[in-house]
Length: 69
Image 1: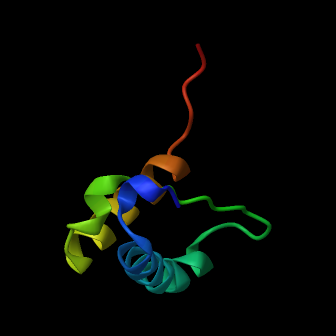
Image 2 (image 1 turned 90 degrees about the horizontal axis):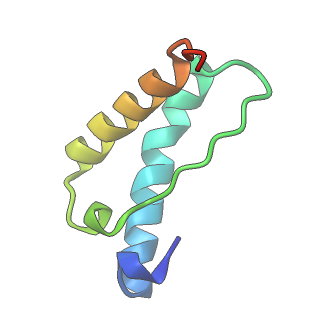
Image 3 (image 1 turned 90 degrees about the vertical axis):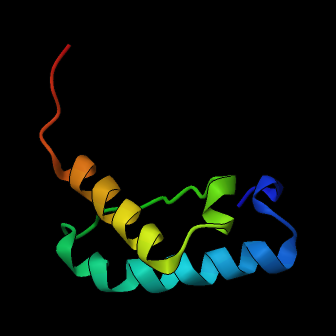
């Protein structure tokens, strides 16, 4: 997690929140899937509900079929 998110206390708080939000959603991913979550500076001020909604949207976008160029 980048230092742009905040000081160590803030980064750890965001990390704990994201870890808690990701844990129950891992079972919906195919086996062997790797998941990387990048927290932007706005995550430090986001509510728990907002982080969950954003995470759900990101996972839905990742599951969506990809378009060919």
